[in-house]
Every structure is written in C-alpha cells, then in structure tokens.
Image 1 (cartoon, rainbow, N blue to C red):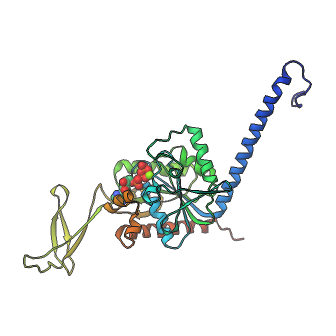
Image 2: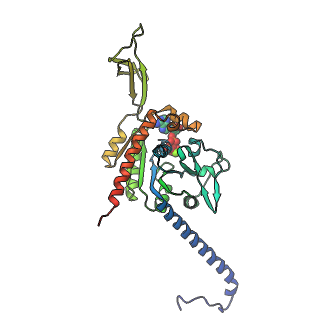
Length: 343
Ligand SMILES: Nc1ncnc2c1ncn2[C@@H]1O[C@H](COP(=O)(O)OP(=O)(O)OP(=O)(O)O)[C@@H](O)[C@H]1O
Ligand SMILES: [Mg+2]
C-alpha cells in the first residue's frame, strides 16, 4: 500500500540495505535538527538586537567597510551598544581597520564571543578564523552560504542596539542569504561615490533592496570632494582678510576662495563630481543620509588600524559621520513608529 511503512521482513537484499537507510535517516534528522537550531538562534538574534542594518554597494572599493566601521564607531560614541559583522568571507578586512588583527576569539559552550574594538564595538569577522591571512579562502556557493548562516547563528552577541553588517560588493548571494536568515532586518544603507558608474551601480543596489522588500534607510555619498585649506597674507605678513582669492587646483584649474578675518580660506575640491549621490537618492525616492569628504587620514587609518573617528574624534570625517548617524537614527525611529499599531 502506498505510504505504508517499510516492512522489516521484505524478501531479497533489503535487509542488507537497512543499516544504510538508518544512517541516511539519521543524517537527515541531524540536518533537520541543525537547521532548526540555526533558525532558533536567528530568531534569538533578531530579538536581542534592536536594529539590524546591512551596508551595501553595487561597486567595489567605494568605501563600504569604511562606512560600516564609521557608523558602528559613531553610534558607539553616542553610547549605543553596537556589533559589527564582516560578511566578506573571502576578503575580510574589518579587523585590520580596527586594530584587531590576530585577536583570538573566545569560544564558550559552542558560541563564539566577538572581539571588542574601539568604543566597545563587538566585532565578528571571518578573518579571526582564518589561519593564514595571505591564503585566499575559496568557498563553493552552497558551502559559503551555509558557513555564513552558521557563522551568524553561532555568535554570542548579547543585547545590542545596532548590528551593522558589512558585505562584499554587489548584490550577490551574501546579502540575499543574510536578509533571508535574520528576521526583522531594518534595512540597507547604500554607499556610493559620486562617479557615474558607481551611481549607476548604487541604483542596482536600491532596486535589489526594493525587490527583497528591504527598506532603504539611505544613501551615503563617499569621497565627495577634497578639503583644502590655507592662509592668505601680504608680503609684509598681514593677513588678506575677507577677500576673494584665487588658488591653483588640480591641473592648474583656477578656484576662488573667500578668506575670513584672519586670512584663512577653505575650499572643497570636487574629485569626481559632487551631489550625484543626493540626486540619485532623490530620483529613486530614498533618503539621503549625507556625504563624507575624501580624507587621506582614512587611508592611513585603514592601514594603521586606527579609524579616523578614533584618531581625530573632532575632525571633519568624525563630524560627517555624526550627521549621517543622526539621520540614520531618525530613519530607524520613523520606521519603528510606522510599525506600532495603537488599538
Ligand atoms: N572618504 C575617504 N577618503 C579617503 N579614502 C577613503 C575614503 N573612503 C574609503 N577610502 C579608502 O578607499 C579604499 C576602499 O575603501 P573600503 O575598503 O572601505 O571600500 P569597500 O567598498 O569596502 O571595498 P570592497 O568592495 O573591496 O569591500 C580604502 O583604502 C579606504 O581607506
Ligand atoms: Mg569592504
């Protein structure tokens, strides 16, 4: 009869196959049990972490990791409990950016405890688990995705206000896996530079988020202009106050600047073009969170493991991050308000 249990007295070679069938069933049960455990951990994570934010970009090298670490540090400076998850499992670099390279993670009762970075930010990255950082890690699709899920589920984050998740570039499998694995994702922050190609790719990221039903919390425009300052003085050393002066920009381009009472001037040179991020945010009907200047200190900080926010907490980059984070919190709060139903 169809659907009846397999008879243990069936003739022929069936008896020989029985142990194999048992093993298969055991393996299937173990797999199902593991999946259930993982799901429970994800649900727990979703409950313990108030806001879960994915940082994406269509194009590589536009500053996702710089923005993800900056958001985390800036939020932590405001007194929030923050976690930072580096999903880039083939080229993880957050530990280096935060001076946490070589940290040994503490494992207790099968749970990985995050490393503690500046301002108490909890950090998890595959880089902590790779023995030789110079050896490329090659993961095949499904194994990589399984590893990501396990990786997320096995971390003891504790209670957090914000979990910032950094991704490799593009709208590939990783953001899909993460957004499907962690319930109640708050949304995505999209990083772009003002170049046309980057903007075009950021539109793809916005569309990806919309397709996934993930709210776009906002666009951050990175490397918008290069700030140059100086002082203007006459040959006798007296300052040239409140005047329009002309300076030589890149390729001899003439740029005018206004001096203040002390003769000091400050101009923002456009490296690519400016305002493209804001324009495309408007055009795509998503919030614009703000822009970050091109700051050579960010590159140095990335190499030395001291983030710009840590090395120059009152500098222009730290100030720009503070503005971005303030707008991000407003977006999160308004989304929270939308979610409340008063009966
Ligand atoms: N505002 C900035 N000013 C100057 N340099 C910057 C700025 N933002 C990022 N950089 C530099 O640009 C490079 C790429 O930045 P980052 O690693 O954050 O990009 P990414 O988008 O995460 O790259 P990937 O796609 O490889 O993950 C780094 O060397 C970083 O220091
Ligand atoms: Mg990166």
